[in-house]
Image 1 (spheres, rainbow, N blue to C red):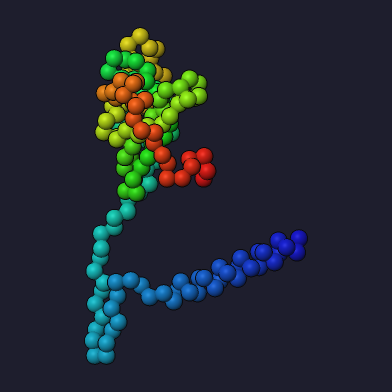
Image 2 (tube, rainbow, N blue to C red):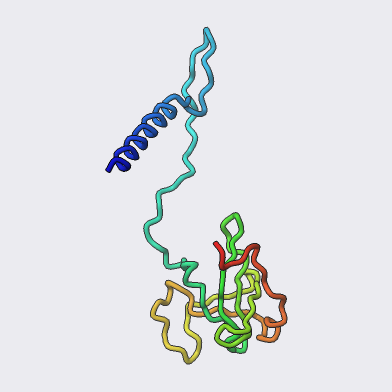
Length: 165
């Protein structure tokens, strides 16, 4: 009980000290007033923030729904599945990592394709059952390559081991 009481006291003291420091920080966009000079009101800068979005839109897909998605070629052959999505620091998707070759994950290697070379469809392939989550996630992806072409691409290498976080 002593540990909790001293922890609570420490947190409260830190909060009080921080509040004082914050209160002493001068507001931004103000100029010091010189003697014999009047202070003018700071100009208003339009806010660039927006309210938080509370619901996924019908034209948006969750990134987590792309992982494991089957990838087909133009001949409607299953040639792999999406193992990862690589984003740039600007937040835009740059690469789709596709696992090709192998059987049940054995002997499979990852290749990376630029985002604009992968087409997504929320419509089921011919002969497949209707996607119960149509619109919420894509049904499949298509690339303009054969399975052999994908297998022959160099293996994608992560900057660090993807199994380590």
